[in-house]
Image 1 (cartoon, protein in one colour):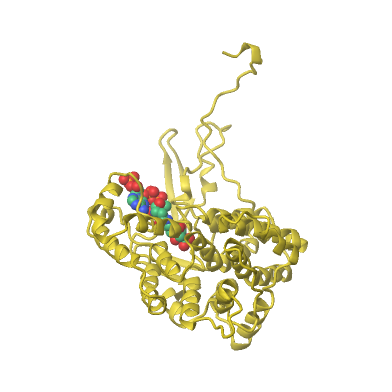
Image 2 (cartoon, helix red, strand yellow):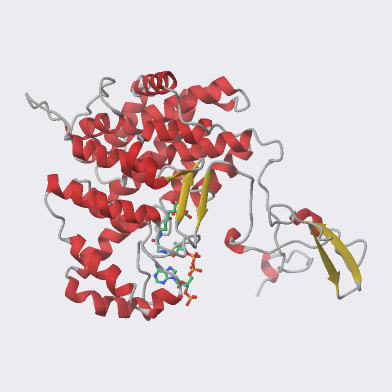
Length: 429
Ligand code: SDX
């Protein structure tokens, strides 16, 4: 009769160990008993980048990288993108179920009535140079919010957590809009609670006291769907940082500042900005073959391609590609789309990419839409931050309330110097 265990034979000692298997994983701690000498530390696993290590148990997001599947709380991303709204998806991620009509109305009311920033914080933006990167402003603004809400450190109190969630989801679009308005030297537009989430954001970005102003509903809808597509993605680098900082019981603003810092990296959420730079550098579909050859020589990576988990087409990229043409119907075609489509076609016919299972990811087409909507490239990762905020918060709540979780503190393989005595300065060569 089969048993849910592994039998491990240590060929160094001939000893045999039976290790329990659950969810196709073993507890790394169960390997510690495998030793040659009793006074040894015991066996660990070594997994740089945590490529094959589960850090937690989660019920939030499911990804099947080979099949290109993405589900939030069991709902396929394609259905949520078509039928839901960003705030409804945020509720789903955080609370685990789709809200009732009343729950959704209350949730939307709370978030849209936590959109104003403390005036001290408004002063913060004037401290930045005009050319400060908006992600640098976003990261420091999140840390600044930590100084305003001292009760946020009571992370084990569910009511306190919920209040910070309202504030973060409500205020981040205002922070993002103020970053942008500071950059272009325009006065801040204060939030309007009578508008929708994405509509209010676009209003704060664009309003210049025109007599008859309204946000284009196609653009507001496109942005709302883009936020849905970015809302969560299981244990990606920035979410892992959110969980790691949160595991020390730091407040959620500080944890999110760290998560945003991780997202800023060009290998992660900063890739959408890098994609536009890449497509602009290529400039013309006719130059794609020569550029791809340089990638294959290892000169640089194809930004917006490849993924740690997806070894098939990122389902988000498929949906984003469709949204692009809805947006172009309002903004006019972004000529870079032709370069991107040719680059994708060329790469997916080339064994270098096919053999490495490198497909377009969420960042490949998103930047083209943002650019068509007149966002400057260095605002793209700020938009990713707005989308990912509910995912970070949902993962943070799940970690805080998980009885198996404790402070994140990985081990290492020490290969440094053995003990040695201090050498006085005058005796050093
Ligand atoms: C996001 O984790 C998430 O879920 C992230 C994200 C989310 O929603 O949170 O999906 C968002 O971050 C999307 C990824 C955005 N980043 C990029 O587009 C940057 C370009 N992509 C790569 O840097 C890379 O694909 C990663 C970082 C995304 C994944 O890297 P891995 O899994 O560590 O893969 P790897 O570096 O081990 O590469 C395997 C092989 C290598 O070749 P060999 O050494 O085997 O010859 O594939 C090559 C790599 O050189 N490779 C690429 C490539 N990505 C990997 N070659 C050319 N272009 C690329 N983009």
